[in-house]
Amino acid sequence: MKILNLFLAIVFLFKLELSFSQTQNVVVVIIDGARYTETFGDPEHTYVPRMAELAQEGTIISEFYNDGFTYTSRAVPALWCGSWTEVQNINYEGSNTQCTLDPSIFEYFRKQKNQPDTKSIHELTYVSSLWLQSFHSDYGEDYWPYTVSQGSTDEEVVNQAKEDMATYQPQLTWVYLPNVDHEGHSGVWENYTGAISTADSLVNELWSYIQNDPFYKDNTTLLVTNDHGRHTDDFLGHGCSCDGCRHIMFLALGPDVKQNYVSDTYRVLPDFATTAALLLDIDMEYATGNVAQEIFLPGTYIEIVKPNNIKITNNFCSFNIEKEQVINIEVYDINGRKVKIIKSKKFNSGAYKINYNLDDLQGIYLIKISSKNINYSQKVLLY
Ligand SMILES: [Zn+2]
Ligand SMILES: [Zn+2]
Image (cartoon, rainbow, N blue to C red; front, top):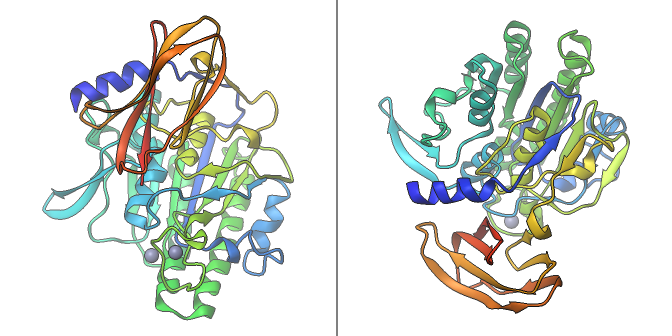
């Protein structure tokens, strides 16, 4: 594991990004288990009238997807970590729970910005055994957020969040609202859609709070999403790969975000934290997500291009080379073992796109592109 981390650290040095954002603070709201057809996928916005109005001041991504596990115990950690992080069952202070293997945005923020816990606050309802962030050797427990887990309703969580924002002025406030998913599982349509309407009001309330607080006004970005949707043909459940489970909302509002803009760029769940991280000017070095730069006003964001314009996905990679050279495209497992050679041959100068099929592999792998002067790899989740 250590060796792999070192390897990743070297590789990710190439993934440099520069931020010129006006954002000083980020507030995140996760609405658990709202299906896209009941949020922005509904042209009437029946259950989300206030967010639809707010969207006129901000950006919606219409093609935002959970591209991994469509249940909360994996999707929420992926939202924290900007990657489909593995989670591990552990016993912590006497109770059984889970922790992430990759560091979370809270840890990156606190370590890189040298901030006390109260500058990154995690607000949620009361749960008996809290899911934990990572024990990663470079980050870990010393950098976890100040977590406030109390009450049982979304209203209580938002009230508490506002109180803590007033008291501590956190730069990163992460608000998790569980009620929509609970009501969905209860099977009563009116309760499910009612919970969405409540969450809709609460997002509006939070935004009003932000814009009326001198500390947060005009320098805070609000990001709202879901961890997963619900089955297309049955709102009671979720957890599969149907469009209903995968398609989720993404709303962004703030000084760096385009106004009244709908982006149809395909984006996936790990991109959420990476995008938030850009605004906070932190580098999520172990994340696999990409910044959704299309939501930002011009000039907010400059990406120092990855070497040779390299792009790596689950089914293809692409790159540019100026000189003829031998390029190796290989797949490594989590223990650093080479499991597959996709290509190893001499390429003339030019731009290439190489398609591949990794259907026989499942789990987290590294796809690596190397030559005499290129050494780049990216973690991918294959499923
Ligand atoms: Zn659920
Ligand atoms: Zn489904």
